Image (spheres, rainbow, N blue to C red):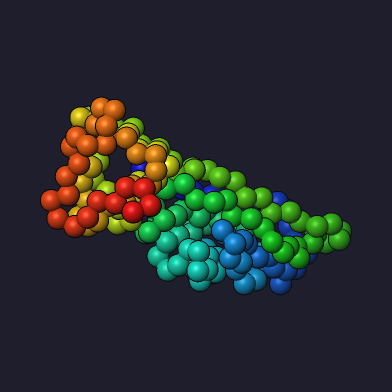
Length: 173
């Protein structure tokens, strides 16, 4: 599935580069981020959150004040909560607050409907928020977790469930 992607955009020119803002992701708040921070600085701030962690976001920027956040690693291929601005001290030279906009570019995958073929899962081995598999195969190299609701086979969760090694967890396990 597609990875969730969001942009952070400073909508104006702050009077001072020392002005900062903080971001909230799923209840965890970053330290101060400068308006002119590099992509690497924003990435480090986000990866330091317990709700994200190392390797689970990639941040790029081609213009000062605009960052693209792509969820990766253990957060890849799934819908992610939207980032939110918590504290914003950015002010223009005229003394007007400079807003920061968070835009969801790609929500990530929220439902999978497979009627034939094979889905091979990546590193997080999770299919969330609705999975329907009919005459098809889900394969992974390690244990697979499917979150409810899950429909396997035709009207029954009996046909075609195979865990040749490892485990298959459906629902809350």
